[in-house]
Length: 409
View 1 (cartoon, rainbow, N blue to C red):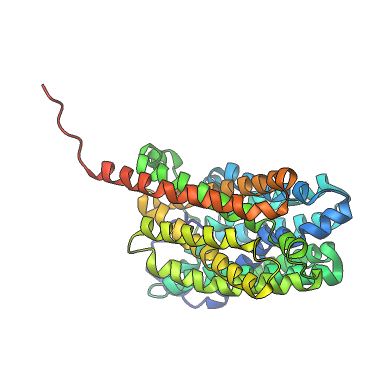
View 2 (view 1 turned 90 degrees about the vertical axis):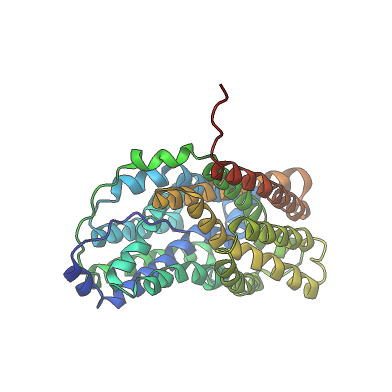
């Protein structure tokens, strides 16, 4: 769910020249695939790295929290500070950071070094998402920018469908360290290819964050941001520990968990389409429906874990709603902003990561106190809390839209 912060170059000649660089757009989409896979691959690796490092799965799950909270805390500021950098050089540096940090994670002798290997790419990720989609539009040129941006977004879906499951399967063959080595190599490869293929673009003007920050005074916008935190907390209270649930509750062999995760992601493609198709009509109403469907899938997973056919149905319901909520939340928050939609999108990415981190923490606490089987029910309860928030946020919208009456004399 990236947010755009790039200022478009004004010269038509430059835009026309950039239109021939379709390969650079494809490389940005593949880079997005590598970056999102790096962010979420830890979900599929938790059981193996926890055993190898001699820690509990719930403790290893805090690596998700570390990554998410780093994005939350540093995302808007770093994106604003670096928004005026020339794009080709910026993307190359960001991918080199991912290459180095993945290599560090592969070499990590303990959870602390592995944590550092997760902290560094978390700094780079929001900067990439804060600039990549609109850069793709500039590269594609007039009339083709929408398709180019969609290609970059496809990197997210590709990571969820193929990157994370294949990385999980690779870890069963080469170990979790081998998966990180593979991501390091892919990141380095993309840095080299972008350096060779991507044209040099005009440096954008420096963003003035203070002027855009006025949206933080809008109660309706803030209500939508808080709703995103709750929704993502529900999603990742469950999803962070999905691989462990499949192994421990459903008795899925470790070598098959990646295929189940891939199935979860493939089904989610339908959710991505549904969310993007319906959200423009009424973002809050679509959020309500998706969150209720999410709650149903989460609540049903543990009780149906012993019946693999019905478990597939529960995971399909969960997966459709889970993936649909990515574009739904992004569009809902950006439409709620009266101005500065770029900053609104960046803030939604940061607050969504706050929800991801909270979800990982909540899920870990649930495992410690009530066991793995309770994770789905608690996540479903959080989703229902999000559903209860929707009419409250809608009330804020009505209050914002209604002019304040003149003071009585």
